[in-house]
Image (cartoon, rainbow, N blue to C red):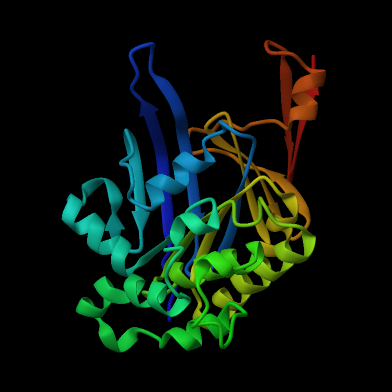
Length: 274
């Protein structure tokens, strides 16, 4: 398996409303290499869930380009988007059981998730029991969703998300309702999917520990990429238009309108308040 690359360029998304338009994303630039793992981190309303919905083809960008693999999401027809979601994209919604039929067995849920992909490329599909083993649920195919513990249900939702052997797996808040042990089980499953299949994984989360485990955490703040954490180090990110968001603690100390002198000396850039 080969993961799909993700490219976002100057992505803007506006929600139209009678009381006034709401700008959810205002110029997002993001690159994710095939097989990468990224956590989108940020407070509620920052735009991270909007971004993952655009990657899933559930919405189209108001401006800019969203590309998954070779597919330009904004240029695809509804039929093409539906086919993409049934084959190359795996989407796991927030709340594990929203992704599952509660009265059915895990095996039945996986067969149903594979139905569309089986019409396109049946030879690429793994048997359901192998998928369940990958997420830490070997031999559980006979169990019904309604009988699962929360962490088991979340791992079952991941199994459904990868049932069609997608190149990109999008997961919304996979650990939000779990205790620490359950969270670690779900993160173990995500790492196994990435390691064994090479699947590109993008997860929306409020939990910094998820970003640490995935290795790369992109902070979305006020509809833009605010900073990026890689292997325990935090970096500011220069956007495509040359702007940069300063960390919140800096903004608290220096109010809007503060003049900052920019000094560039070799590989070091220094901001000095005037």
